[in-house]
Image 1 (tube, rainbow, N blue to C red):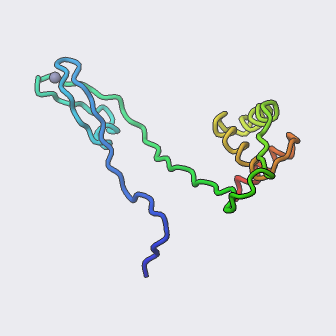
Image 2 (cartoon, rainbow, N blue to C red):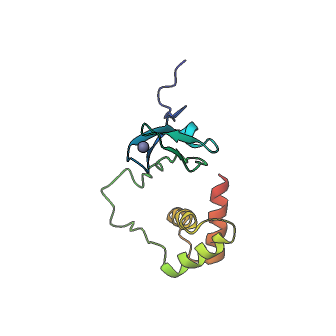
Image 3 (tube, helix red, strand yellow):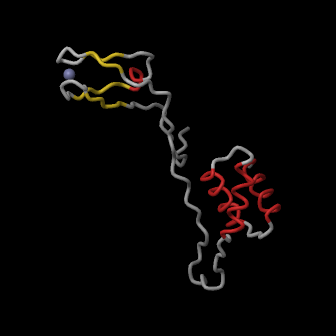
Length: 135
Ligand SMILES: [Zn+2]
């Protein structure tokens, strides 16, 4: 059985990094594996041997799925989305950074949570944001 509708994620990747010989300017492509090897040295055609800074990892990021707000576009006027106030957002971000989120992460999830359920109370907003992460 083949599931046709499932969105596929990559099963493997092939990352290469370009380095330049400091002596002659020749470019060298290293594989991710080479670049993440401790004390990896590249020997250039000019005879120069140079070390490369060890790579710790790459993060693969996917686009967030687009949120379809309304299928019926004829009556947009009566449902104007209220956006979160700067003050509330700043306070909520500060609270979430205490939980170990970065500012941009916090800002992202708060706005998303606010879009779903617009509450203007800081405590409730933080609570519903954290709860939304569990799903
Ligand atoms: Zn060279």
